Image (cartoon, one colour):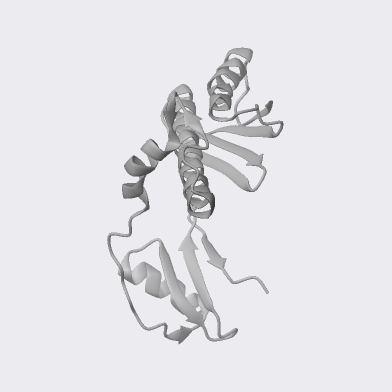
Length: 184
């Protein structure tokens, strides 16, 4: 795996770069052959918060983690933990599909334990614990943002009166708002 480490409002020292490569390099143990993709790591410091963004594009999967914390090294560790959970979930999902199609068990191994053992543990992570239903009132984007702020959520699903499609508005980490629309 190739590493592209860049700093945003922080100088990336050799020690910091080595730490990133060492920690993220440990993810290669989850693959039969080391991935040939690039790991893009952005380290940022804003108002005493250390932000780590890691993006690893793989075939059919995009692994991404973003962590904010008070210590850069701890943030890197937490980002690697998030990436490990994502890898395990993807492998569990893939193994479940393979078992359903061909009846094969344990296509991947994880630390000497077949992933089918992990799938039992991670089933709980994929279980829906609550379902909400509500009418999608037609409204414009500005009204949806006001509704979202009124109920105190960080996202809001609504029927866009201009496009007559289901949209989602959400509050971004920078305090601004985003809109998710279906692709045409």
